[in-house]
Length: 394
Image 1 (cartoon, rainbow, N blue to C red):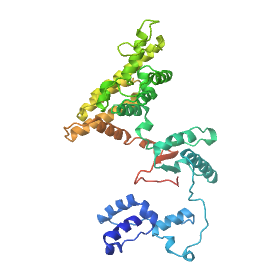
Image 2 (cartoon, rainbow, N blue to C red; image 1 turned 90 degrees about the vertical axis):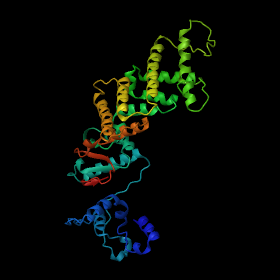
Image 3 (tube, rainbow, N blue to C red; image 1 turned 180 degrees about the vertical axis):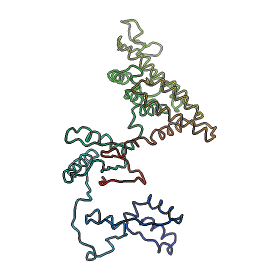
Image 4 (cartoon, one colour; image 1 turned 180 degrees about the horizontal axis):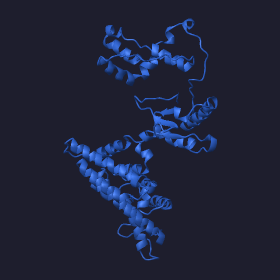
């Protein structure tokens, strides 16, 4: 590439004189393949060239032949260039948003199918550098079509968080343990339906809790002791414990009692009989979350972490038929981490952050591989060295 050549000239001018960029697209985009070929050639292999020039005269075939023969048009005059007629074999579209990109893609695919009735969706691949961010747009545009406008498709290479609501809930739960227990962060855990189901809460209950937390002035920290751990004065005000105690005290006092300060707490009398059930279930959730935080504060051996997180799965998820398969994948990832540490002879202890990263990597590894080459459109990530046996690449 031009960048590598510039560095080589600074280090050794004579050696750089033997280097050539060739075709700039191949030099800048073909690094993974070039490194692989260099390793093969270093082993002195038996060479059998099977590259064939493209016979068609389209713009795409012209570019492919230039890459094969290392021709670069800027080095030649216009008179030396073979004449060609511009066509749509290579298209570049500028769009104002990711959603619009997917909509334009769909329009172009419909046009391709109309122009070539023999083109099959399984012959088309769509690659994106960030499959997780585009997956919702793909589902929204391609997943809502019916009848003649329906195009079969699959999305490969999605992360565990995008592909599994249970994995996303667990990872969010574990990430919260090292936080300051901010009000918004703790309540956002109840956005996960699996966690709400485990503690008997509904979406309406979550909205009610949001109103309570806002009016009670809860900001962050379980109590004053947790605030002291973060280097601030151990005040109870605006902590979870202080706000919830106001609710409980307001319900416990006799009806008609003056809302005076009791043991440095100002009661809040908004609770009714139905609200006490919601509060009780939320207190169970918060106590479980706090207890898990205490258990997760000290480093452990990976096998001990696997046992600890197994208990967390039982504590925060129902494990019924709707969640069984996803929970089993998580358990397999935790067991795999413990087995790997034992096979490596590792006897040390690691913090929660390391375990969290390793579990996420194990869940991501191989996820979505079964959704590659399914016979429909294939949406996937730009994985290095991926074989692309498709007629159309988007």
